[in-house]
Length: 265
Image (cartoon, rainbow, N blue to C red):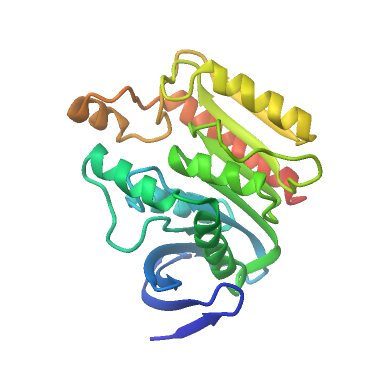
């Protein structure tokens, strides 16, 4: 067992398990932010020894689950090192929308707390031996999409952020000269949780702040369109969500192109 200490965040990290899949390495990482324990998941391909860009993956409001880990593995297969972080705390994985809402509200009760949790995970990623610490991006889904947008608004030193079906309105506003990241947003035209007023508001906000924004809206597409499990959530809980294979594929293709551009690949 190997223990590391991150000076910037004072996060205690414990590498708890490693699995090898062909040339892909995956690692479950337990770490602390303050006095609270968190569990993340790191994925990278060790076939190439050269440092490569790192990408943070922020989970949906359900918590750090298999879907978030699968996105990290997809990024690793594409040549990046990815860290699926944990915004709620170890063991906080919702099995009902009421629990998800409770976890989300606790995590987002103030912007400094959520920034601390995000930057602690970012520090872990930057210090991994496979990562070029100067090339970091973040992508998030649903709740996670809102998180990465807010990290950009707060001026966190990221090359780019990608939001998939995330909330676009926020009490945190982008200010001219503050946002370092380029921003890419994918949203559904039929997303009842992210109405057109939020889309228009984000465009105006980012335009006024001089942010490099690319926004794609998929007509007729609902919330959670990247997650194949969305249809099950809709049936079980009566939620207005649905998986859309075409939108998921197009947004993923666009994301990889975005990363190639911002990382100069």
